[in-house]
Length: 294
Image (cartoon, rainbow, N blue to C red; front, side):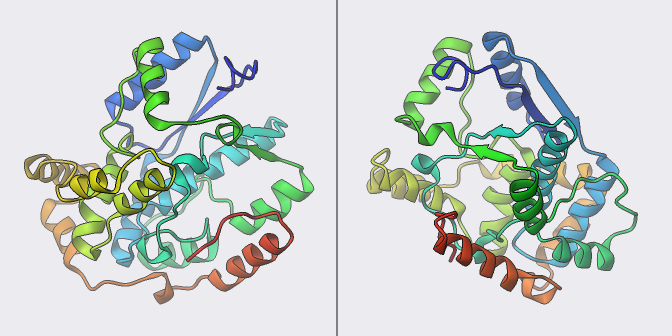
């Protein structure tokens, strides 16, 4: 869309947090070659990433993908600031993401540095010297209002259909579609397909499919049929459980113990959820925030 439909030449920015699937890497390479665009990859310090992810797992909360989100967005904002880039293009869109999962399902409202620091201070084993961590309030006030950084969502400006987009990418570039949303990351795939539904009973696919139903891209019957079965086989998920444990430097038994520990939420740790929520409500009343959080 950015290049072929809007005539732009964006610099592609990718954050490697250590969990890319081979398919995701291949897809990136095909798009770079096919669109003749430049790519910059920011590689997150794995030892720090691992320590922070283990801290969140030990914290026992549903919001296990906050660490990757923090790495992705904070690294992007820092890169843009350092290179005086004022305009950022993102693929987020209302067409496939209009129905947000409930906050209790691991949908915490942004990067809360107070929450991160409290969890890491309790469970971490090393200093986070290079890990990118920009608080959502700092981003909203400093990066957006003072520095003037703007995030654009071009897919909201054109007719966007998920199936049509995937077909076009396959035909033009040999891109391979993923089985489900967020399956480009092995950790997110494991977290959403195994950890979250089996430990907490939360199925993010319900929210994902609800967006497609509301925008006429999926029938309710088709969604219920998909929900009746796991996206991945039991054997595959068992292998992924072992892979995640090995990747994080712990045993399968230790990961299983983390899985079985008492359940907690962000409320068990220091946070400024009330302030983030207040800011979101004010921005919504000013017409600067269109999302509703629940």
